[in-house]
Length: 328
Image (spheres, rainbow, N blue to C red):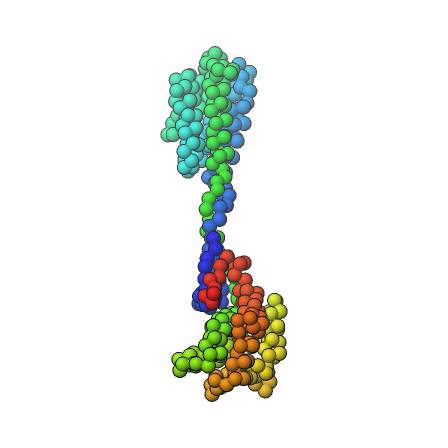
C-alpha cells in the first residue's frame, strides 16, 4: 500500500526516526503448521502398521503381537500429537477414527486390545488365547476393522495435508536508512523548488510595478530562501547528476541573479540575497521575468533539477510513498 506525504512531512518523518524510514505493509505468506508437521510424522508411522499384512496362526502369534503393539503405540502417539491441532476438519476425521475403535471395542477386547487411561494397550495373554476367527475378522480382509481404519486414515491424511500449510497475513517492515547530510540536502532542494514556484507566481505583480509593502516583504523573503537553498555543495554521491546541473545553471545565470540581489561569495560556495535590493528598477523587473516568468527556462530547470535530486536521494517510489506536490 502506498502512503501519501508532502516532501516536508516525509523528511520530518525520516529525521525524527533516526534518519530512517520504516514502511510496514501486509503481505500474504505461506506458513508451516509445526504441530501438523509433527502429527504427520506420527501418522506416517501409524500408516505403515495399518498397511502391514496381518495373519494369525500359532506360528505367527509372536510376530503378530509385536505388530499389534507397534500399531497401538503409533496410534496413541498420533492421537497425542492431534490434541494440539485446532483444524476442525482434521479433528473431525480423527473423531471418526476413534469412533471405529469405540464401535469395535468388544471385538478388540477379544484379541486383547483395550483402552486404559486414554491409551490403547495389548494384553499378550488374551491375544495368545484368542480365536483365529476373531483375529481375522478384525485384521484381515476388505470388510475388516483394519480396512475401515485404512479408509478413514486416508481422509485424515488429506485433512492433515490441507492444514499443513496456510496462507496468512504477515506484517512486513522495511527500513531504509539515510544519512543526515543527504536528508539536509533533500530539504534544501524542497525549499528551492517551493520558493521558485512562489516567486514565479509574483511575476505579474513585479512587472506591474505596483508592489505593496506586503508584496515586497514576501518577495524578499522568498528570494532570500531561494538563494540559501538552490546552490549547494555536497560531499556525498548525488547519483542523478542534477545537483551539478543545478549549480551550473546558477553560475550560468550569475549576471541575472545579481540584478535580483542574489550573489555568490568569493569562493562560489554559496548564494545570498541582499535585503536592501530595490525591487522597483527596470533591470530588476527584466531579470525577474527572464528567470521566473511564465515561460522562463531557468525556473523550469530549477524545478526539474531540485525534484531530481530529492527523488534520487529519498527514492519515494522505492519506499512505498506517493508525494503530494503542494506547489501545484
